[in-house]
Length: 300
Image (cartoon, rainbow, N blue to C red; front, side, top):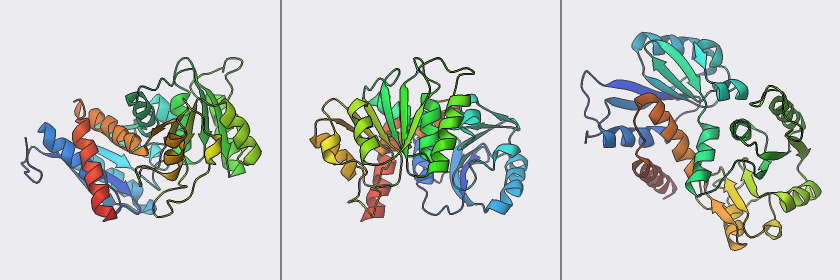
């Protein structure tokens, strides 16, 4: 096992770029994975402001940086600077991962696939299920497009709080969400989130995916879903991972639903990045422990 900080001339660099970037846990999780697998990569964070993205990508090419994680505000703006983009990222219109393959920069999105992997890790079959997605922002968009690439397609309903954002997401999913011509009955439905729409959709949903910041630390007492709307045998997945058990998940679990923490999505999206950069299976236990340790230290 290579020790963190043990660097030779053969070591290549991966990094996360964003603005701001100081809060990122990506260096901890990826350096732990590289160390555990003896991979000649190190991972750092680069603060890249929006107007500096072109110069930053020139630097990626000239310095031979192996891979990037991409966070706010660059997930959309980075696309013109790439040579190729995979199908899910193209449909989503967003990239969170770049692979430098011998000078060819290829864009991927691992957020949505990471969410699906997190559910599958809890033995949740997603294909063909009735899914309610709460939120229509970046996280919701990534998850929705990943769901639309499954077969058989889930029956997807989306409740949002920002009308133009919700309408655009639903329109984009129905136009280019993984199928050139959506089959009859497979169209995504969208509605504004209120008491009536929430109650109606919760009664039908088999899987609920919460993809908004509500309930995130420090405002841990908030939730979008009243506890009485949960049913036994539902699956409730929250993208929020700090705290690990949000109020939403606590009340879902107490109602007999299966509660799935957003920590699984965070680890799995990073694991997919690791696999894209290295071609190796990701050390899931090591990566999970690294995130847990970083969250524990941050919340002390």
